[in-house]
Image 1 (tube, helix red, strand yellow):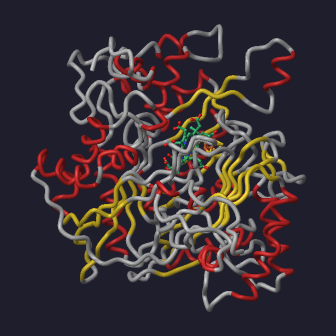
Image 2: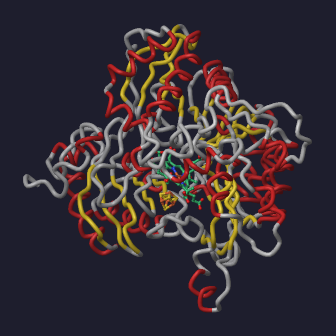
Image 3: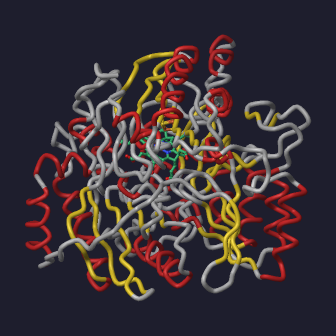
Length: 587
Ligand code: SRM
Ligand code: SF4
């Protein structure tokens, strides 16, 4: 590939010319005349974990005042399986005050994001994180992203193995250029030539995602990943993984050539073949992924264009890999069980519900960060979590659904931690505060920071869930779980196409409504109504929820019900996502 290849997408040219991701980032950081960095560099900084944004709440006002947009940065850490110690947590929390907006945002891929970071704070933030053993290398960008792993396997030894695997894969696939150390850690250049053994100078055509889970828990939404590794356990020991390939959520409104897709299970890899299998799959995508059209560049399209047979041929040709037939597995649910549990080692764990992942202290009026974020009045969530981290000797694990597991609590500390949880009113499932419906709801970030948002999400879903809770009560339903997802645009950051009910932003106050995904994350949903506002959403949902209450079969989930009774057609695979949309005629 060369810079003279005119068909390459602009981002490919930027990568080629960047000298292993350096670009002019160092100059941009030094430029005090603007709060922004050069446009080309904004593509490169993603590889270092940060995005240039501007505060969208202030955009119009700044424009009227003829000021440059309120530039700021979002910075995302790399944290395989979302695991930190109490000490690391306290430092991560401190950095939010020191360099960001005093809030932490947990992500759907088990890590922390800082918002409203000023340019001058990027370097110190990354240096302070590095001092506690955490970096942001490849948290974003055209490389492998944060490797997810289930937070909930029942067996502690299996749990430890999943964490090890996520770290091993994350390290193996991390980009290697010394640019990170030189620009952000200000270490001297070594004089040695840079080398990217897996990625080469143009890295991957697009982002790449890996998740690991052990059935029956699918809390990572495994099938939404480019590679999903399904842990197979024999006699309480992890023996290998079924390999699922080609998952992804991102679509573009009005462009049917883009579609979400769930991973296809292509076989079983024993433990000694896993690293090689994953690396080879990454290189297939590196070499065959579309580098001209970024909307067609994810692994899911490479697979659908070439076929699964081609992937097997490539595995054999490149690394003499022949996967065994996939082993039996059975997922039961996605999402997180909120509450306390004890593992087979007698260690205690508690999963705390963090609505949409925003960790903040909310004041008497429920305001955080000057009212940009709202929550329950006088809810000191951030302080409470800090108090837990101060005494907790185990780990703190972020889940793929924006929640926090205080994990491996010594029996002697259980009462003290339970006392803090209760004192601060944090939801451990034992309070009456939140319904099962709310526990199963999840929204992406959207306004005010996300530059791609078309509608509110994090700041609106809690209200909408409250109204759906009322519909549930009116239908005489108890505390039932329906997976509800919302995103501010169709990129799919809260994995909306796996929602039994989902809302995807179209314009301010307007959403596309999707129905019918499976409760275990194994079936996509389908578009039901386009561009509707809250009144229409509730008017559509009320009779459906009533009907579910009256007609469902024992233990039938909402997503399965709406498909069975014909309210919506089932999506069988990504390529039929756009077929038979809308209310089905039989309904
Ligand atoms: Fe995402 C872009 C936030 C998980 C698909 N995502 C963005 C950006 C960076 C917007 C941008 O490009 O300017 C968002 C920053 C918002 C902000 O202000 O913080 C953003 N994505 C997030 C997070 C923080 C949402 C959250 O509520 O937690 C998640 C961070 C995960 C992490 O720690 O790495 C997040 N994004 C996802 C997921 C879910 C997942 O990975 O399990 C998806 C769908 C799965 C997939 O990749 O297919 C996802 N994000 C996208 C896409 C569409 C990709 C595509 O294939 O089309 C974009 C836009 C893009 O890449 O062009 C995007
Ligand atoms: Fe932004 Fe869209 Fe992702 Fe939401 S789904 S965070 S609006 S890119």
